[in-house]
Amino acid sequence: MRIAFIGLGNMGGLMARNLVKAGHHVDGFDLDDAALNEASGHGVRAAGSAAAAAGDADLVITMLPAGPHVLRCYDDILPAARPGTLFADCSTIDVADAHAAARAAVTAGHRALDAPVSGGVVGASAATLTFMVGAAESDFAAVEPVLAAMGRRVVHCGGPGAGQAAKICNNMILGASMIAVSEAFVLGERLGLSHQALYDVASAASGQCWALTTNCPVPGPVPASPANHDYRPGFAGALMAKDLGLAANAVRAHGVAADLGLHAAEIYAAFAEGAGAGQDFSAIVNSIRERS
Ligand code: NAD
Image 1 (tube, rainbow, N blue to C red):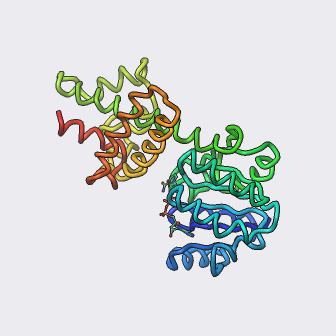
Image 2 (cartoon, rainbow, N blue to C red):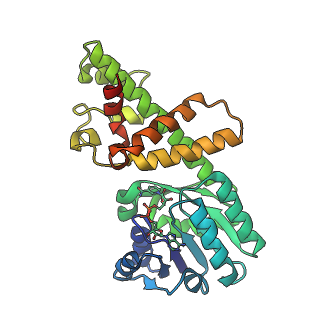
């Protein structure tokens, strides 16, 4: 398949490489010359513009920072693509922007889907990402083998927009549960409870969750968690703040009484204004301790 890959940053550069490894012809573009050169060193053919990359493609993948970048990029590339080209946006963007991007593509005579990812740069490099796909059945069938070359799980979540919806709902659970686990550890400290004792009870009881048993926010109980490695991400506080901001937009737009989700978005927004931006999101435990 002839693929255009637009946005060759931390994630996209690694994902595009895996498509080349899988035998695809990949024309790439990034506004940043260094990112474009790096990708071309790994078999991606450097195009002179996003529109030039998209012109001959069967599939156009975008991996851009946020919704406005995707919408602006679509303005450039939709007119350049052959009619019926499939557009797959893998960026994490606002659900409303995902719907707008899909509408613009369809209006221009193309097909569109959203396929945001989880797994971070480690997953992008090892081709072990999870893709959450919002697509029509036939478009999902067409894109699945391509996404499978970059990831381990490809989940069809529903029609266009459903991939972004799944991503922000999941991360709203994750943000709120990490705060809850961290608050419990700090309360336990004040009550004279050791981290290990709380872990031994909660990990085998109803407090069990991923934030506790895989990404445990205090050092000790889970040796591989970022807490044991100076809170190096992992999943950075800035990205959690971004995703919770997208979730909060959707919560407000749909009038959902998601009090915890909205509060989690505020807590992580404040955390990401300081050093937390570059730390693993589990370092929120330190901010809770400092504020206690
Ligand atoms: P990044 O900033 O490293 O890469 C984005 C790239 O897009 C940059 O190289 C930038 O120059 C380029 N770009 C911006 N506008 C462009 C345009 N109009 N045309 C061509 N190139 C353009 O970001 P990233 O970490 O690779 O993340 C990309 C997306 O993936 C984001 O939406 C992010 O939320 C999501 N995501 C990131 C991670 C992660 O761990 N980094 C994990 C999951 C999801």
